[in-house]
Image (cartoon, rainbow, N blue to C red; front, side, top):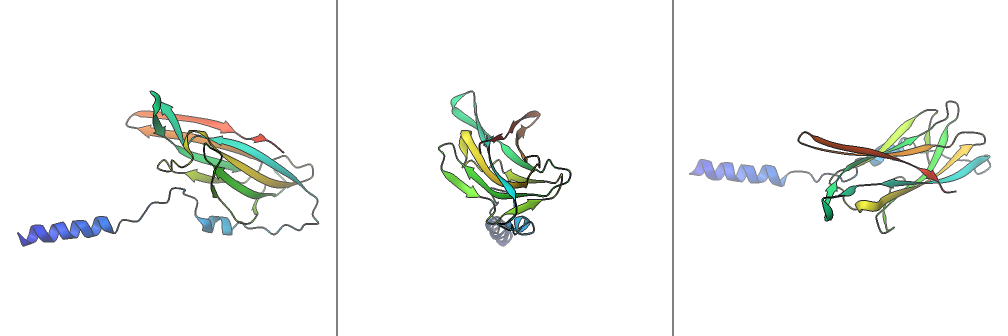
Length: 169
């Protein structure tokens, strides 16, 4: 009997020590390695882009949703110039701010890509979530590309699709 009680207590201890999983997989330490100081006198051009993201989609009816993992790909399309991302703001279906991904501007070297992962368990964004990105590039430099790749797999079934950003400023 003592063995069973000991096993029960041990089992409870193990499950109670389980760490809470982050709902957005990008570690803040990754952004701090990329922080950039932008000189206000630099002749950089400002831009703003919109990207739709689907952390959930409807399934069967409007009353049932299916959660997805979303990978937001931030790409420097220039093969010669470094670009700067000023903000990456994530909004939910109703336009309410969910989170901001970096506090200071970050850089992307020529042809470099970085990602933001929105875990499948993160349903804060809902069926109509979106991003607004603000960025600066040298004159004549191609603008950055922001893409969303959403996917989910259950058993032998898989679902995936993508979205691309639209420049809004």
